Length: 166
Image 1 (cartoon, rainbow, N blue to C red):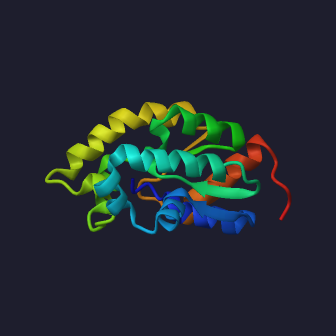
Image 2 (spheres, rainbow, N blue to C red):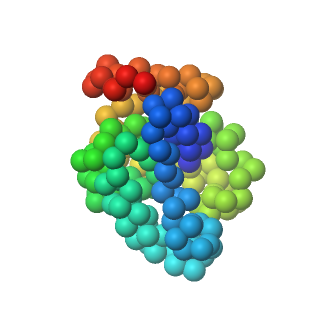
Image 3 (cartoon, rainbow, N blue to C red):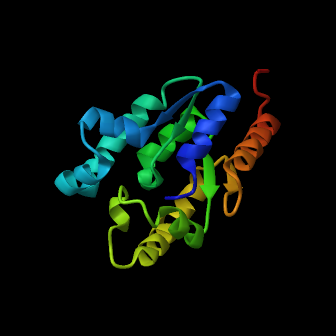
């Protein structure tokens, strides 16, 4: 949460001339409701079921940049699907940076609590090893401009497997 997935994903898609897709936005479009509503009505498990289905479908597409929600990595099915169909980038960020970037965002159901820092620390402890397991590329985003992060990802992508020339 707050690592810059959507912003950096859009920049990557523009630079690489690929379609940008966001699994959370796709879930909302299909449900006709926002994520907080889905969490309220179906709980996290219901949301994760929707997420798994959308990621399976979207990751089958070619020539895309796909931004997933931060919790997508919790399910082995999602990690396996993403790894099998593309290059997985982990945008690593600190809890401090996450707090700064998400403090005014009411569209994050897991952070609607008395102590968002504690929630983020718990999520980081749970998810960080899974991100490391799934990632082909790891890029630190703290105090960095999104364009600089996107450029670093492109550089690493080109180093690992040359991209088609623009």
